[in-house]
Image 1: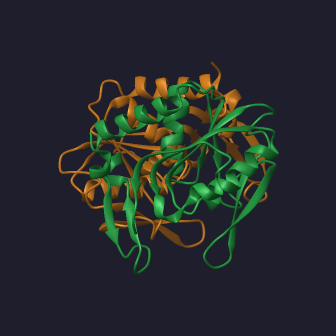
Image 2: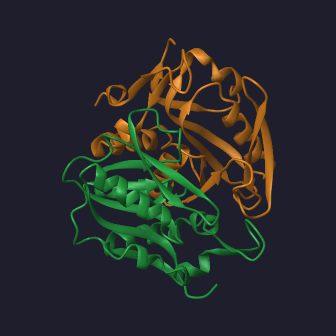
Length: 173
Length: 173
């Protein structure tokens, strides 16, 4: 199945000049959703995964299904102020300014192997912050998995210490 | 399995006097996550479901897994400004003021049977708004499914036209 054909491009969202990759058309397609998950599982089938971490909020979608299929737990990484228990925080750079992500201190345990999941890999800032959160809790990043990677933003330069996989690649802006 | 025992209560979050039900401890437990999903599937096994709608953002977790297991699509209902394509909006009341939710116009098609999913049923305002979104697009609400229901908030009064199911009930504040 051509998964790229299931993704809708929306010009000028959220601002002029950006072509937004809208995954809702893929999610709406039961067989495409299933095939996406099966391909992600296939990519990491040689790895032991103890926890799947999903980055708020679209990352929750694939992270949850992967955790379910692997029979392990799913841990959310969230924007500031949304997690209720004791937590740690890491900031990342935005085009203008910075933002941060939080994780519960019991989301990952010492020595656990963690798969980080999001729908789209852009500049990699949020993923890098998530990897730091996992490592501060003693976890090992077994991989970073995405439905989409915007290759031209070169996130892999930032994530070169990790195994990064994506199902659909966009090579030019 | 006692799913209620997997949920953590956090006093005074997000504000004094509120006991927040933290589901991250259940999500972190692979077998508890699996059993929750299996019980939800069991509740609606007599229903034909064409689309599963998840309410941002914790609703995405169970909605995604249920859609995947049913082999159908998952449609997100989101806070204002986050969906990139043509959409409709419905508002709901908050304790002070109101807020709204949005859905893409192609998220549900005429005649489709829709399962609405969220992690927690409180006052039911967001669920009622979501049901209106589904119905405006010509869908039929086959059911509303939650991990947790706060019975004392009496959301069922608001949702009396729908089939409502929850796995864990809290009877008093």
